[in-house]
Image 1 (cartoon, rainbow, N blue to C red):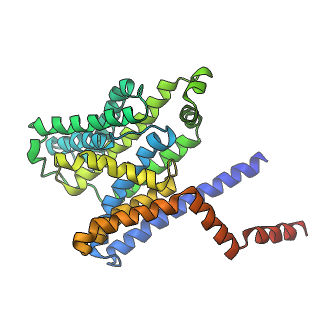
Image 2: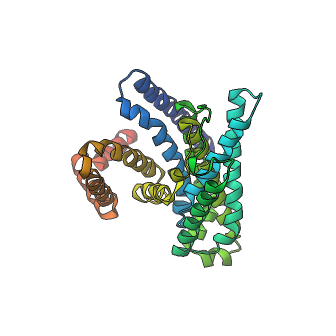
Image 3: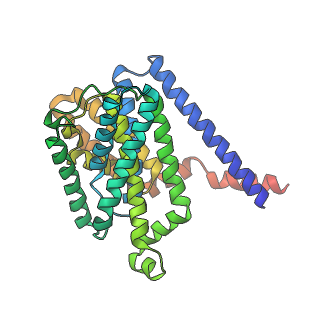
Length: 331
């Protein structure tokens, strides 16, 4: 039994690895072979960075069940700290400088995640959302006043070290981290905190510790996303990280399904692509985008999902197919 389980796990790992490689090759070929439009090709890096942001926020919002609007702040910390390092680093090879900058961005964001998480995570619901939103605005205000960050003028001449490959690698790492955390012992403890805070505390689960753990991991990957953003677009402005950015990331997670990582990824791709696609509608762009959001929300509702499943079962009789396979197995 154990042997079969190990074999199945190994097979799943191999299939996942092959799918990751094929996914990378397919998108790379479409970009380089001019199969995708110029507009879509330019959107690929932004989609990848948004996926990292959305999946990492799903750890806080979906797994932990806390409403946070501070993700743009952590992204800003990662972006500026990594960019300051690479613009000041002299004598280091570009590859090494970029790797160090990525981890500086992630670690700095995680450090701020711990510092803010200890007092802030004692709050819940709307109060937590308001305080984390205030954190984002405080970070933006500090960046505006510092000369090392370029102030309101922003930071420019950042080396363009990031590319599709780097974004893809860290996108996959973020997804793997989120999935493995959810399946781990720590993930189950975090889920118990989400389901019943009082019961988890009564059972001896260190609630504050696990809340800070989830918050810090999410902040780390937001910092990585910020570093990738800085070294993709080479110019940073404080307005790139305002409260609208935090709300956009939250929308990706909510519309994708709280804690549903595949749904979050699909929602992120659609909601990053649609605003650009709808630019051709001019003044009607925001109206069209709003209608698309409403449609996604309707399709993502539990009742609609059940109706769609019922329709699919009528078209494709899965139960009959499964029964036939079982009968063949018995023979």
